[in-house]
Image 1 (tube, rainbow, N blue to C red):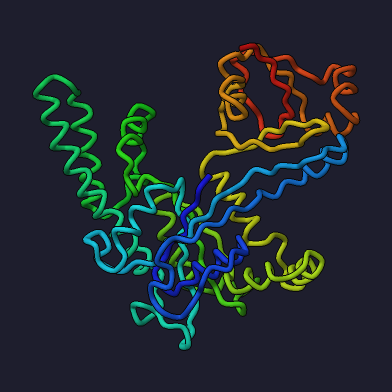
Image 2 (cartoon, rainbow, N blue to C red; image 1 turned 90 degrees about the vertical axis):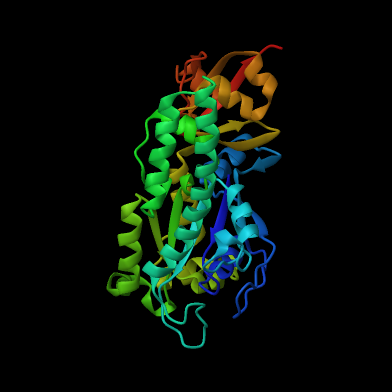
Length: 364
């Protein structure tokens, strides 16, 4: 899973990136500090793997991973190549979802590229550039589909859908705000439009607003109102505090979180939200050699899940033996779970569930 961290210059996105990846990306008080995207890969925290590693005395533990891409800040006119616009847009095309950092605090010492803090305007600035870029793409697709229609190589429905996309973009709304059926989604996915990508808004508040004061922050309220229009998720956190948390050792970090009244770090919240936004979950494999988490889409069937390990597993899939994580741990192992009838032997139509511990049977 690849997440692109975006935002106007100086809103805190590189600070957030540093916090969640500990990658030490340059973060400074001037526009375009980030030119080429910084990339950081982080493990997805999962206590189940730690428990299984002890249970199996496994030699290796492999967590699911998320790749974060800190993408250059942009300004008005990015869709026409202003600032670092063209690079910014090409980098967004490569991610699965967008983490849009929005500044929600006043500080005279930190320059705002627009001269003032205004979350609604800032969100519109980035969204509009993505919309304008998509509008240009959709116009080209409409021209192409009309030629195909004359040749009998496409359908009126496809042309009609493209015109609907154009109308949505012209009303300055992203494509993700549309309620498309499965067939329409399949068609639109092939267009690789920027505004189809799901967005998670991160409302970056000051250290003083953590806790009860979050609810009194009018800037945060603006972010929620904008997100509601496109059914997007919102996370409220202080990027500066997150950076401080991640600079501490584990024990100190937990004490600091407790002092601040935080039950989870920003990274943990962001990962949970990302999985939910993208409709993802994890299944597990366990043995003496390795305990591992595998990320798949919710609704994935057993053969496709097996293919995440190796394509041969999917091609030669016979069946899968599955035990629920809780049953495996409470009974003390796979063989004990099998004796108690807790191991299921499933076929090609089995839909995988989060936390399934799996042994695939295949023949190539």
